[in-house]
Amino acid sequence: MSTLAAAPLVDSFGRVHNNLRISITDRCNVRCFYCMPEKGVEFMPRSEILTFEEIERFVRVAVTLGVNKIRITGGEPLVRKDLPVLLRKLIDIPGVNDIALTTNGVLLPKLAGPLYDAGLRRLNIHLDTLDRDRFFHITRRDDLGKVLDGIALARRLGFGPIKLNAVAVKNLVEEDIVPIARFCRENRIEPRFIEFMPLDAQQLWNKSKVLTADEIIETLSREVAPLVPVADPDPRAPATEYVYTDGGGTVGFISSVSKPFCMNCNRLRITSDGKLRYCLFAIEETDVRGILRSGTDEELARTIRETVSKKWIGHEINSSRFVAPPRPMYAIGG
Ligand code: SAM
Ligand code: SF4
Image (cartoon, rainbow, N blue to C red; front, side, top):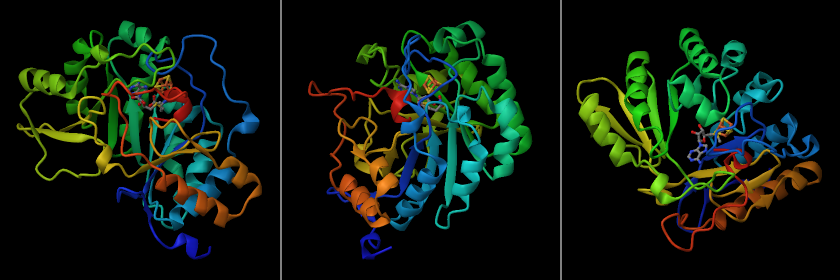
């Protein structure tokens, strides 16, 4: 690589980017209402999806620019054929210090073993409820049992840390907060409550449907055990972390709506069809698939750098100027 690759990825607000989220598919085996439409989803043609070789090359170049943390997401990453092969390739890249995967867990009973063998350890498993009917209502699939089996298997195999992502939707999951928190305490899993964000395909979101972090903290403090902010928070982590005062573990909150954390953002995303995005909510995106298919590493590095340099100060969910991105969550990669 040329000198283009020497300096870290810094945007015009001084934020250094070392964290890359890679969506490897827009396909999914469930249909969460806050992400996908129930029927008639048009997935991207396979020819438009980046190959493993293209993803690996992208990461190799990104690493030369200071990227060292990677999260694989989707769509549902476990539906992508031969995922353990991709993980092995990425884990083996010198400079990749940390690799994690976000999954809905449905295929974990089948794939947790091969993923572990490939070297993966960090898992975020998405589960909003322990109630079978509400699970069906949210995901439009009757797969709660598979997710619970997948979590149990992942624990037995020794994955860690395992975190559990629960989307906080008002007038829907209030009853689930306490059971989810207790389940996590019993299983030594950190729950992360994620405020419902305006990224759903059916545009059902409005602010009154967001169950906020403060509301959840109050419920858990009252019904499980008192929660206090962690003593030494990582300012660059998207989740605000709290600990139970009785030693029962940590709880994370992604309060993108009630307390946006844009000024600490160190993340860059690439979609499964090779579009680079400087923000989950970005409207503009930069094509890198063309460069991966017919350009040089230097062009790729320059394009990554230019994309980061164009990054806005932050999303404006709480302003009347907010415009939801044209891609819903499953097509961006959460
Ligand atoms: N399919 C995997 C899963 O569900 O974990 C990975 C992709 S999914 C888009 C990544 C995360 O986005 C999920 O864990 C879920 O918690 C979160 N998510 C999806 N739609 C959301 C929304 N509208 N608001 C907030 N979080 C959302
Ligand atoms: Fe699929 Fe994940 Fe979206 Fe649910 S949140 S529909 S599991 S991609």
